[in-house]
Amino acid sequence: MDFNDSPQEAAFRNEARTWLAEHAPAHVIAPGSKMTDVEESKRGRAWMRELFLGGWSGLTFPKALGGRGLSGSEAVIFSEEEGKYNLPKGPFTSIGTGMALPVIAKHGNDEQRAQFIEATLKGDITWCQLFSEPAAGSDLAALRTKAVRADDGSGDWIINGQKVWSSWAHLTDWGILVVRTDPSVPKHKGLTFFIVDMKTPGIETRPIRQISGASEFNETFLTDVRIPDANRIGAEGEGWACCMTVLMGERLGSGAHRSGVEPILDLAEQTPDGHGGTMIDDRSIRQQLAEALAEEQAERFFQARLRTMVSKGENPGALAGMIKLAYASRYQKTNGLALELRGLSGIAPDADDTQTADAQYHYIYSTVMRIAGGADEVLRNQIAERVLGMPGEVRMDKDIPFEQLK
Image (spheres, rainbow, N blue to C red):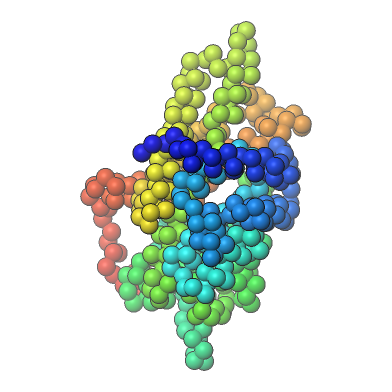
């Protein structure tokens, strides 16, 4: 695969670069900016609206659904150029564009696509993910939130249970939700996928205080929540397949397209080493940075390959987990190195040292990425079994009905 731009791709890149130079600066978040979650979400919606009005939103979606019908390579090019700006593109936007829309596009019906895709691309609708539970994290198929048909003949579903680690659920409009509808079959087969209006009676979100000081994660409680069958995505019992579509999008998008290594290279070149040189003169530092930069470039090319597969209708499957696994490890190591280069100021920076404050936040948050979207150990199992063809892990509960599990 040739990773150099073709003449057509080079022209597209120049078009994207020109448009971003004109429109992105007004939306850039300055280093060290302190915003409330409400303000951050508001700015995220504004950038999504700017993208949509400029024709840069949903690049691979059909034009009839609000997109541009372009190829995966063009979407990658735009993401690379967009990544050069520090824009408000947190989970409050990416869960919608990277998780909700792919599952609606693939497993939803025409009415659902018409209702949600363009509105999400515009920023009119934002999304959260209602997957993990207190007893179902890495083993998502062990979830216990259940849905039963209403007994009034309406065809609606009544849902009861608890979800956790629901990013931005306290501010988003809709949620993607997986629940158990048939406990009489093995755990992966009795799941069904829904979309739910977060203002539906019976939904309660409780923000979780994090070590970073933020509260973007939530516990979400569902008590006798009534959801119409029209909000079901895919067939009854097809929930696991829908989940895999969502998780593939999440893992494939890990790391975005902004370099996390180049700023640390600049820092090493500017930081005195106390011996008349800078930290870049240290062989150990150079070795760590060289390895991280090589990994980042390799991941970028591999990610482009997988996105091309998706644009052709192919399913990368467990290959997408390799992107997330590599990114999460590097994200933690490079942010740790960024603090080490700062010496004691990495622990106690000056009040006006916003760059170090940002580095501290990213280092603290990096631990999340070793778990969110698939823990390292789970991803290694999947890669070993489904990519390398190694023997599968022993699963004693594989063919046992969920209701018989202890």
